[in-house]
Length: 404
Ligand SMILES: Cc1ncc(COP(=O)(O)O)c(C=O)c1O
Image (cartoon, rainbow, N blue to C red; front, top):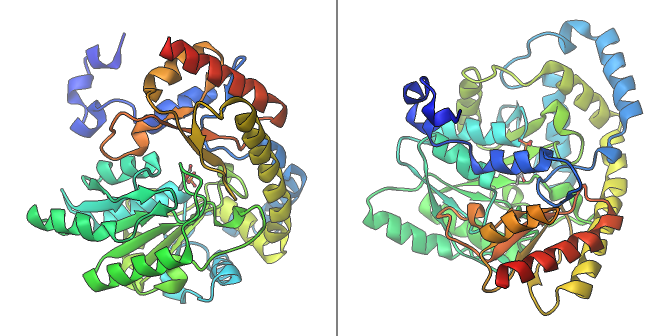
C-alpha cells in the first residue's frame, strides 16, 4: 500500500504530504547495497573512524563524568565543549567567538534548523547557491522559507548575483533574510570560493543588511591542509558560521556548532529548547576530550590523504574514460566532483545507471528551482579506489544507453 492511499495520509500536515525529501531518496540509494559502485551519499569512510580511541574515550567519560556525560545538557551545550570549540574556531581563523556567540548543535542540519526557526517568517526568502546542498533547501522550505537562486560559475558563487536577486525580490516586496553559502569544497560542486569573492560577498551583505549563513562542513579537508580566510573571519558582524563534525570525526555522534552575533545565537538556543533541547551530552564529552587532547587535529592529515587518494583515482578514471563525453570539477578537498554531460537528462541517466550497478545523485535537486539538469554529483568519499575505474565504465555504458 502506498502511503498516499493510507487512511492517515489526509490527516498529515501539508508539508508532510509532499512525500519523501530528495535527501531521503539519496540516503535510500546509499543504503541499497548489492553489487553497486556507490557514489551517492556524502558519507565519511567508516574505515577512517578511530574506533579504539573512540571506545577508550567513551569509556573514560562515562566512568569519570557520568553525571555529565549521561545527563541532559544545557541548550547551548556543555561549557567545556563550548570553550574547546571557541578555541577550535580560532585554530584556523583570526577570530574567536565570545562566550555568548557559540552554540553546540546536533550536527549541521540541526544548525540550519535552528537558524530557520530563529529567523524565518512564512514566505521569507533565503538566497542559495545554484547548485547547493539539497538538505539545506529541505530545511529552509520546511520552515516555510522560499529559496531564491543566486548564480554560480566555474569558480563558485558570483557574489554580485546577490544584487540581482535582491532587485527581483524587491519587486516582490519581500526582503530576504539570509544568504546560505558553502565556501569550502562545496556540496555538490567540490569548488572552493576565492578570498576575493568572500570579501565581496561580505561587502554586499553588509551594505544590504543581509546575514550570511556560512557552512564550513568541509573546511578542514583541503588535501594540502591549507585554509582560506573564512567568511566569518572577514565579516563576523554579518555572519553565522555553522560547522559539523560529521565529515571529519563521525556522524554517529551528531555534533556541530554555530557561531555568530549573540542575538542570533541566543534565538537559536531558544529554538533548541523546542527541538531536542540539547545536543547529546555523551557525544559532547567525547568530542571535548578529543579536541582538548589534540586527537582531532592529529587525525586530519590521515583523512586528507585518504580522500585525496580517492579523488585522484576518480580523476584518473575520468581522464581515461570520459574525456569526450563530459566535463567535471577537480576537487582540491572534500568529498565531491560535479559533472556536466551535455545533452543528457541525468535523472533518466540515474535510473539507467542503477540498473547497471552504479549510483550517483542527478543534478536537478541541487538547484532550488529543480530545473532538469545535465549535471550530476559523484561523492567518492567511501568508494574503494579499486572500484573507481569500474564505476566510470558503468557510467559510460549508461550514457551510451540513454543516448541510444
Ligand atoms: C554542506 C553540508 N552541510 C551540512 C551537512 C549535514 O551535516 P550533518 O550530517 O552534521 O547534519 C552536509 C552533509 O552532507 C553537507 O554537505
